[in-house]
Image 1: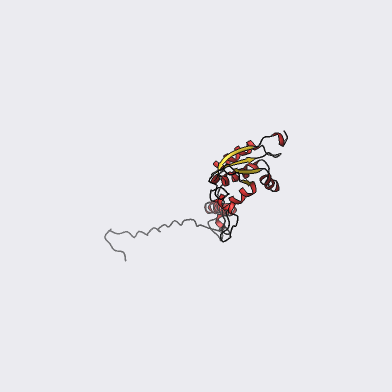
Image 2 (image 1 turned 45 degrees about the vertical axis):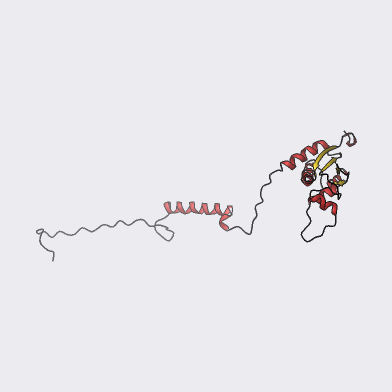
Length: 196
């Protein structure tokens, strides 16, 4: 199928839904293999939104600009982007709150499929795992190889304790000494006689 024979896809969105749908469309286009300069060209030439009330056209590039909020302290002179960011039509005086978004085909993208996927990604964004932040070097006892080495050392010491020598300089333990009292000599006599 060539790109011209594929029909464009259209979807009607509220003004405040445009940034969220734009984010979903970026992810959906990326899943189709469109990225970098091709993605910029796709949004500049093949994506547009038209106000259903006054007919004001917003390009895909302009949609991307309303997604990114201006940095603190910077002045934005584009009244159209400001009004869209606030949820109003970009044309002063227009009371319409809906835009008809159109996605035209390109070789890697079938518009109906990418719009459906963009809606799904916008409504149900994928859960991304929280990144693990390392604040500095880990303590030596938390490093896995050191834990294995400590475990092996503990086993060696336990075996040495049980089976190692009991005398000499390498002895960890000593054999218990059994003390016995020497027998006292018997001197005969009565049981009441004191020993002298």
